Image 1 (cartoon, rainbow, N blue to C red):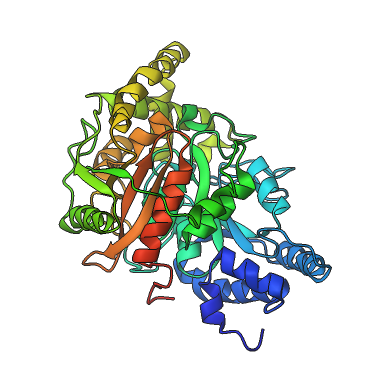
Image 2: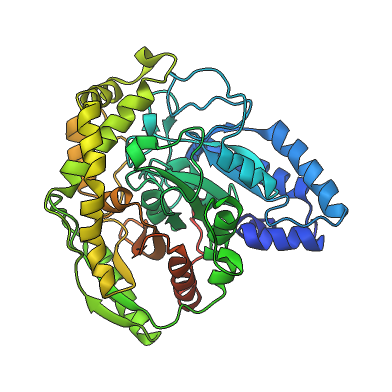
Length: 466
């Protein structure tokens, strides 16, 4: 790898690295060592990894190189990736951002098994807020994860460590999870393409039905192609002809697109100027690309967030806490959050889940007339590190929800949604637009996002810190 620019390679992304590995231009052990060197140099300040699995990563890379030398070809063979620390990796604890966790897990989660089967090398497990609750990644146990674009600010959460790992060139690709926006929020503030897939597309096992059906696993990536590679490797549902990588190479055709800057009630968040501007700049670009663009809001039910998203969120955290080996070690704010979830009875939760279909049908009615809805990725930029210290669960939730009102509705409906990098705010933090498609229509999201990526490339943007 002596003739390869290592800085360029660190930010090349999974797809390009896979091609370089297959061509013999780089080696899997060399690629892993490059990332481990970068992690050693940069992560003490960024704190995006909870644990770095250096020895096993080197061993996996050596085996991957043997397979490459033998002519074997897999989509991610030898590519180093990061795994969010709410997903099981054999031999490692699943810490959930806490000291309350139990012993190391005996086997990989199904999604990790699928990524390994595609040839991926696991670099380590990434930082999360305690029990994945917050859109900022700061814990008493593991400290604060910092945004590489401006270290005074959070990268978001709960997949904050995964976002930083990819944005800072410390992994080629990362696994995130999204129960109330936890892929899309840090992808926005870290300048990545992040995709919340259709519910049940990517396996959650052994943690099925996480957060009462709100949560999904998905990719956080430098390019649309990289996210498509992840989906092709992990999908439990039928994929398009040619897979999602094929969809990323196809024009989406002329689509009907609705722009919306109003969040679902009762969230009365004020959308910032740069976030609002991104939506309308996107609309202008999409018109130039031949799409039919209108301004129209989904028909959000008036109490959808309070009647659906929040009860499932609180109860999901309560149920997760109930599985912990040492819950007394949790932060007081987390214990308070879980106690609120314990007030929601099984009977009440069954009624909430039963009402989902009616709510979803109402929100889906906009797709009778359009193919994609575009919203801001977030209403504002991220909080400063430490902004919510010494606050309780309810007051913290009230403050953070105003920043991220556009995500939770689509966890309730279960449909796919993605964020596409756009610009930067006055603090140097990336912004995004969110694209929402019909149920099970990741194909349209991938194809349209790739078209935007080609017209307005983002993958070579890098944090000055890195």
